[in-house]
Amino acid sequence: MQTVLISGGGIAGPVLAYWLRRHGFGATVVERAPGPRPGGQAVDVRGVALDVVERTGLLERARSVRTRMRGMSVLDPDGQEVDRSTEATFSSGRLDSDDIELLREDLVRMVHEHTRADVEYLFGNSITALDERETGVRVDFAHGASRTFDLVVGADGLHSTVRRLAFGPEERFAHHLGSYLSVFSADNFLALDDWQMWLRDGDAGFGIMPVRDNTELRIAFGFESGPLAHDSGALRQLVADKLAALRWNGMRLAKAALEAPDFYCDAMAQIRLDNWSRGRVTLLGDAGYCPSPLSGQGTSLALVGAYVLADCLARAHGDHRAAYADYERRMRSFVTLNQALATENPGGPASETSVAHAKNALSLDG
Image (cartoon, rainbow, N blue to C red; front, top):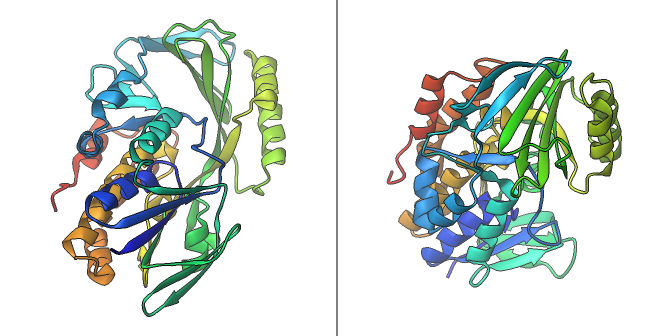
């Protein structure tokens, strides 16, 4: 039985592990966090990615925890409503769509619960070195003894350790899109009832949506900026300062950002590589082809990529060279179309035609 080490316990990694096990491979997932990661924004599962969720056996469960928005308001910098919709929201698109919007942490949790019985998870650990040999890859870990695996997959996000170790420094492949996104939770101090609020003030803006039966807010705050040092403490303070400068509820939002246990902030960037594989190592999801949250397609790309990669390995009977080549052949144009959603109309939503084309431009069956 061929063994595959997957770095990253978010969405792409565990879904890949599920399908590898179905195809007869041994799957181990290593994740830096002590358990499935909480927090994060609402994510969308669209088009062919819905087929992946259904084939994985999670569609009904995903639908049961989807967001239930009634609509949204668009506010001016003083908090006055200038537009509203009961047909669509900026976060999920049309409310009558078959697409599913759910919290990232809910999807992470359900995929982990669905796979933990027959997938080895190494939480609280990370890869420190890769040494490829003729018959496998020797992997050193931050904790515990080294082990050898037949294949290694980096599904460890925008700042992928596997990509850095196997392909080189991040700056070779990261393309900054001119802005940052922060996501954090707070009590529902706005008393929102299944209703979103969106506001832009100068070069900054936010979307706020209630979750957990309207007991909690999930706040997504974006601001324009060139590349900044990746210092979590400094970024949190910068976000708080920018929020405090807003005219509507700025101080309350700043306080929430400073106190949030799940605070996140990172650059809006894309990862672009000419090849996603090197030897026995390949990349999956954001590690190989992050489209940025501006595309709205990161989760769908992760789900589809995981399914396709596992299918390619199964069809090639473990011949990683043939499998990785087939993976790139099947996924490359799909990735290109989805990355274009974030760049075709900077600062605004992509056209409905482009979104429809991108989300369905691939067949799971090759």
